[in-house]
Image 1 (cartoon, rainbow, N blue to C red):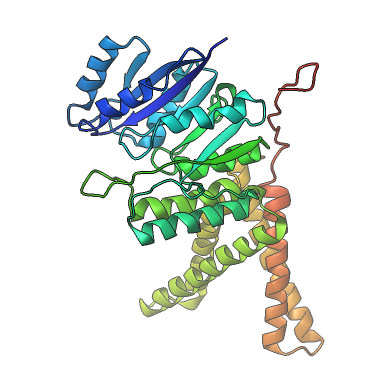
Image 2 (image 1 turned 45 degrees about the vertical axis):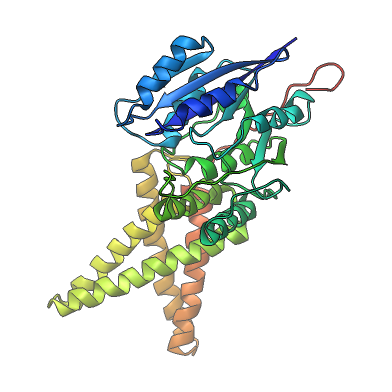
Length: 375
């Protein structure tokens, strides 16, 4: 009995390579593998959409979808995944960097009942690779290392295009990233689902920016943000506390800068200090929901903010009380304030994690087993 592979091809201005790419994908079909090719044109300004529609006329297994406005690779994949009907779903870029023949090998662990998700690694293969961009490669490896540190996976290539999923898995993932942030986001979310993830070496024929490569430095910073945003809320407590110290340090620095700027503008300290404190608290809150905790994980937005303001107020009074207490018992001013600040940091972090941003229990996907114990 043949199985079906849905190949989603996000496409933006790939008129020069789209036809050859689709033909290479079509060539992997066989008696035991049916294909469904979903081309998602992301508002291309060249002839990509018309080329895709011509290919659709020639091959009934091709489905063409489109966006009226360019949204990015992640958005195109979100559209394609929702329309997939195959047993397995794969991502295929519309350029010629990846060889579709590798897809037949990548679905094998899933066909054998070993895996739920399989990633193709550009760094595990012994095949030929075009030699390009040392710093780009180093950046990929750094992002993979950072992602692994949070997900507790040992992937060698988090940023790879070739990611293959069981359809029922990818269609239940809520993809939020519209651009290349899809890669760290999907890794974080499948890791959180406790899936059986495999990795295999693939061939890779990189292209230059002159040849149409689109990912850039801005996307690297977005990937860094996505790793923190989609992973930190479930990281071990010590790591969460370190991230919170970083956030607290930025907020404290912002507090100082605003206070000094207001003083330079002639604002009285009695007004400058509380205004700077409130603005720093707002920044701290925004950074918490951007980098560390889940927004509205337990409470609605207004309730979450009110609880946050209440916690800040309580910790402020505790800081004042602790400082005065230590001074009363003869502790030096610097040590008294530092100790009170440390107490405040612990209380702040504990209140955020256990009360304000505490998450309800998260369910994890588990493969259904038949009577023999096989998926």
